[in-house]
Image 1 (cartoon, rainbow, N blue to C red):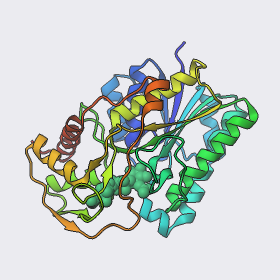
Image 2: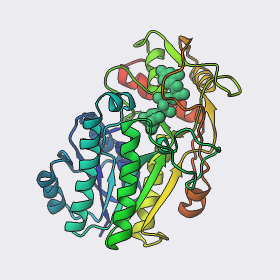
Image 3: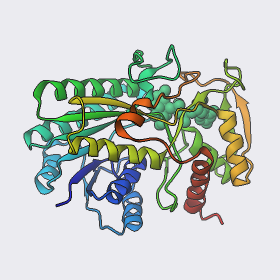
Image 4: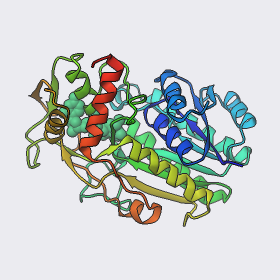
Length: 341
Ligand code: UD1
């Protein structure tokens, strides 16, 4: 019998790509999502790409008794928990919304897993836990810095909850994956990132500007102490990131984890500047992106990129798609969504 994985938040950007890769790797998948920040197009895209009629349950993970029904109905032994709010700025202006949602849903996941006897969980963490790191690249042992947003704080708190729960009870194993900057889309252009309203992240803003939906991209700061003055980030292809979830689940399913709780960076290991990303996007896609230099954005770190040695060695995982391929896929997706030829 195939192993089944519950993907919470599986209608969203990273969740939908992960559902595809799980199915490609031979897992059965059930998607749970409250559709608060996604619609059914992600699930339909997964079904089209895989040819599998992936089961979908509309449920809020914060509603424990409704969520329990999913555990009763489906016999998954593993959960990948994506369902969370993720807008950094909004988390600063409305922290209660973030603490209530992101902590309650994860506590429910863990409690229900233990009550219903399920074993393996992957938590979506973020490079944001490192803040402005003292040394680059960051390893998993680089000390975390106090969070500068409630969003970032929920990531740190959930990591700690998972560490303590997995360590204390012995009935549950967990892995936190610290994502760097996920970008790009599936090569089919059937799933991708579709932010509601004005995009807050760089690549969706770039693709929407190229598509003529936004007038002008602001490059936030060109006077940072970096080679070209703009910030450095580690942009990880979303399909590569999705595959990291598959190997993390497989590691636990096969009992290969070395500790009940483990943490892995998921990045490429390369720092890329905003200006470099922009010019690569223009070059590989043959389009111009109207842009201007704007003041620094409050809260941005100057530079961060990953040391991925641990994931390379322990998970046998490494990023495969090049930045050019990824930026091409981001544009193909945007064109597909907007009906641009
Ligand atoms: C943020 C979050 C991170 C989260 C990620 C994806 C923090 C500090 N960061 O990362 O946890 O995983 O979003 O949701 O919590 N930029 C521009 N113009 C724009 C938009 C961005 O120049 O219009 C620049 C930014 O200054 C930054 C880079 O592009 O240097 C990347 O920004 P963004 O895509 O927003 O991601 P992060 O802030 O790195």
